[in-house]
Image 1 (cartoon, helix red, strand yellow):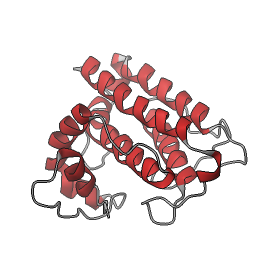
Image 2 (image 1 turned 30 degrees about the horizontal axis):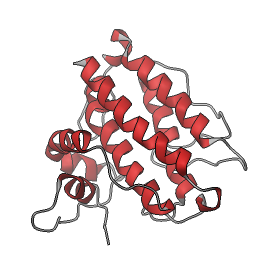
Image 3 (image 1 turned 135 degrees about the horizontal axis):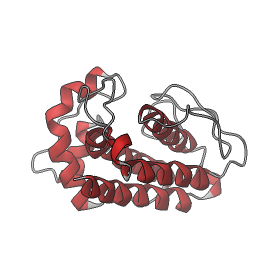
Image 4 (image 1 turned 30 degrees about the vertical axis):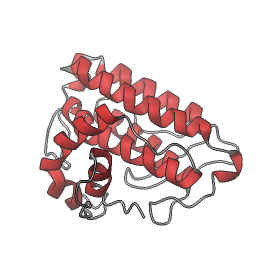
Length: 199
């Protein structure tokens, strides 16, 4: 199973990194669908969240790097002017893939969260993919990028995440789900599950 999770994570993180690299310099301050956050904040939040997961999986404590600071996992840490956000995300992405390849680290149980005390591997398979996919859309929506997500990863993540909708909401990190329109496609349903309003 670990190779399937790693492949899924690699696919969604590749998609996010492509959107980061495509952001026009003048669009980093553009408001995002996340209240109070601009495009830069979305990327910093995801980098910071990765660092927190890596720490819970036996890694070193989160530390500033590549111009991106640290803070609570649900927040958006400070970003230095001129920070290379693509390099910063690439660093945590590579660290995540290395962690997923380590049998001991990926088996560490998380202290809690939307799914309860599950192994890191299981948390990445569901919550990790959901976070990356939704924030890929957030970034694209904020910056005029490609909003189309990987349909295979969307479908699998939606099936895995739907049973944990109440747990996601209870964390306070997700907005309340939005009712999808009749006949909505999987991407729309996934975004609505995460509380995104598409209009």
